[in-house]
Length: 182
Image (cartoon, one colour):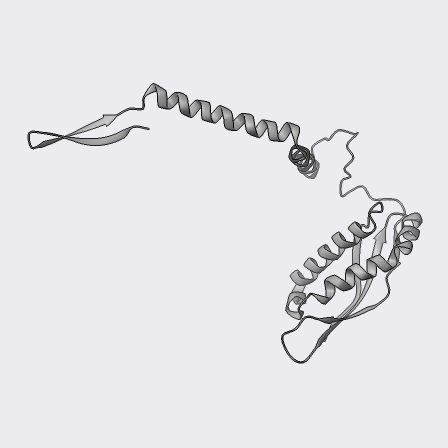
């Protein structure tokens, strides 16, 4: 990283090139080592490092690499032998709208669970699940539900919310039986 300059000598200009001094190089190297040490400290001693390690292990599994057998994360191909489906009650919600004419969403949803025991746990907290869905659905606009991308976003959001509501149980998927926007 040399700097360029022009010097005047009796009306003529000479092009000179200045090189970096040893002190500037030393400061740069010390700064670089400090940044690397801070990143290592963050990765080793904070939850951020654990999160990065989990994501790296997940990417390794997705690419077909071998992961350690004691890992708590399950891959997408680990499916239980028995799959249980649970139908939630039909929901009819008023969507958010700027028009004076109201718009409604009628939604019928099924949940994919791992076992019948999970179904009983979800049944016990069903009012919480319905409330979570209702609160989220009432904030949606009809434009957000249009197209395949709208349905995919809705499915991902509902799956995340239901997994938070039935915390020890893991819901595999949210399946739409009926969806009507009016």
